[in-house]
Length: 503
Image (cartoon, rainbow, N blue to C red; front, side):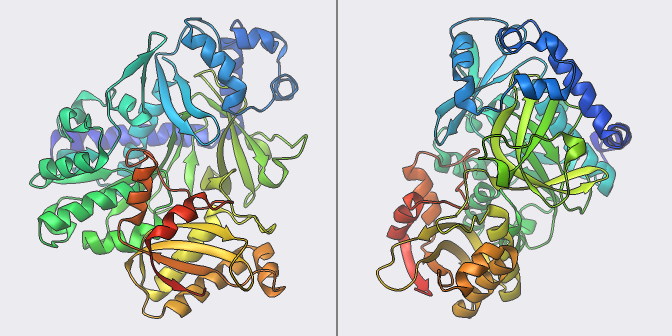
């Protein structure tokens, strides 16, 4: 074992002890964060306008600070971009994180001197908690690869501006940077296809031990390696590869194909990072759900999804949530976001400690007929059917077909397969039955002959890559929505259909 792996284990034990301390006192941990946030921002423009000096409790906060999305903060952000200080948080942000929104266009999310520790420290602790849970620290002695956006920063209003993964790249600890790949020059390549091929060239003969990235883009990297090594499994190209770190999408639909490409099962560590903060990570091996980080400068609120669009939905703190309920995740943080709706939905699977699963996006659903099918339901239905039928799925998305040329309307699934089902009709019906079991509204629509069972459109290889490229969203942190309530994505993918089952 190398020095890094030797030193990591006692450090991991210290981190685990600290996590255990606050996770066993969750309400107190959140109350401490809440109090510090309010006290710190009392004299800011936002704090004065919302009477932070009169906020003594969470109930006071809810009365004075409404839930907002990015549009509700745009004027404050513009004020900061124009050079103002003490707007949302004391001083000025040290970065703006650039991210694209479906309704707001480009968004500029502030990162402050205080909030950068949430991003960097949480990523570090996720790996240390993995080491503590698994005993595997050897991967620190090999090469580590982070498939991410470009670290090149521009500037807006005198504040450095970049993608989150690019910003974080500037804060990788020096002891990890020595064995981090790809090179800085390669990481700066903007064209994603060119970049991944260059990364493959740089890494193919290196002792890679940890690989990190969104599953769909790591899959592209693996396919290029296969091509260069004439079909060799990843385990033969990288014998030391033992840890896959991912976030952004559910790994389960990809797992079977990944394990076939790798040639063995490797440990995986799931993360829940976003431009607005690092919210949760997998703290056990294996475990259901991610540990919600309650002591890193973020105060959380939760709105039941079925109340979200009501005039006065309930806003709940950590001590008020229930298991198994879908909530919209609302946050206030030390970057100066207050009662901010990030758009993600979560469900608690444990309270001791508080662990969540990400169930989708508040705006990503299919409910053209009142069924309100969410990402978690389609992902699990596909996972179950694919496992039973030994089918490999590369990528997929679902949209409603409201006006078919004939017959009843239906849900249309666009699927890129790595390995086609032996019996496509049986596979199709297994997905439909699994979805009916998970969503009673969908089941009622099928049984009531309002909808017919779902239709699968098998699309050509790399169809989703071509689609993302046409949208200017190939690579980095971008991912295809699992669900849509319109036909925008479906109409584009219709150009790549190779086969259809059920319609």
